[in-house]
Length: 221
Figure 1 (cartoon, helix red, strand yellow):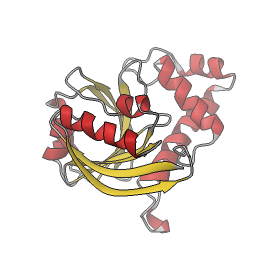
Figure 2 (figure 1 turned 30 degrees about the vertical axis):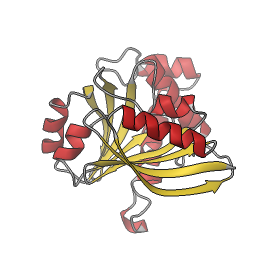
Figure 3 (figure 1 turned 45 degrees about the vertical axis):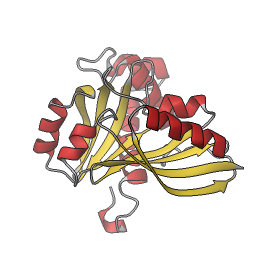
Figure 4 (figure 1 turned 30 degrees about the horizontal axis):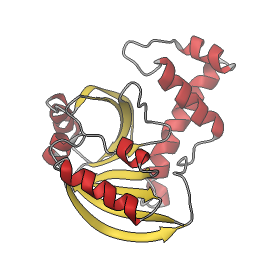
């Protein structure tokens, strides 16, 4: 059995805090799989609901992120790739060191809501101590036990997941790109058109599997 904790965290040192505080109506969801790129300190987020001009202005002044890039936009939802700066306190590595994983992280009203899976209450207590020592305001919203699990793929097929992981690793989403579509296709052993279709469908699946789940069927992407 694992412990699942739903937490509310807030601190100026948490990623995107200046941006989500300036845009409290925005719904920002960090994508952990396949979006996290810990070696390059890059990550992906889905953003829904804000005035994107104001959101982008806040991003430009946000000391926690670097090189914000819009990767896709559809029906008022954007996917961004962002880099982490040295000013950020990242909670994910600490959770991993404690034998747990972050299942979900999204903002509401300028606060981060985080869903963790940890081995036991001792691990959760250790994470709480880390937050207190780091100046992160910690509030426990819900606590329960469940069978061990892992974060799902939000509707991605294995081919789509592999395509996105390879594309991110090889710099396909960089500006300028570090690898062309043709080179990425050769790396994956597929055609140029297959790569293009997989990327577009994968982004749509990520949006549909996260931000669209509460929408009526006629409004889903």
